[in-house]
Length: 298
Image: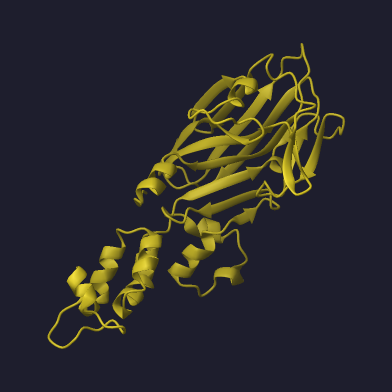
């Protein structure tokens, strides 16, 4: 292949009597591209005209889009995608698409083409959130929704939510994104404030997820424990924590999947406070592995 590349001219053609990559039919290149990741396709498109043509093929990019991508398009104004090629649609849906009054976002992973979702704390039901003595909201650029919920002090802690969406068949992981203590910027530097953080070491927080078809996952942990160190020994205190609640499976039989989730600590023998709740994410369970290996999983 190296020899062929060296014999390919700047315009993608080959010198007389020499066969190179520029002589490959677009249809053959397109068939190969169907087995590659979108970033690989975009890189190879720079080689010659045949590769550029194949890299713009609707058939190639149709194979990278999830089976229900039209449901994502339905969340957008018609003029945003009318007349677009499949490649342009993939690029459009690789950026977050907001819905439910900008409280939820869905997008395609740029490498695998699989659906990911994030749900703001604004879309969740939070006990006593209307009382500023217990909860308040503060803006931050550390959240994709630009705002997080901050628990000052409560006796009954409960955050819950529901999402209904036509997820394509896959195994998904649901994760809460939380932060022990409050944080702010002082003289351009990020500073964490743990002054009002208390009570989380006295009882476990219970996480739950369930689906309409009967799947369920439950876990408990002391927030005081998970903020100390991760598996590699890195200090997590003062950082955002991604807590995995569990997994659920979507089969091809259900057009819409309903997922319910919650995070609660309702032991009223003591108060607790000093906790930020940002969002809940739903992503394919092996997405990290696929990114690391560069494989295209569906």
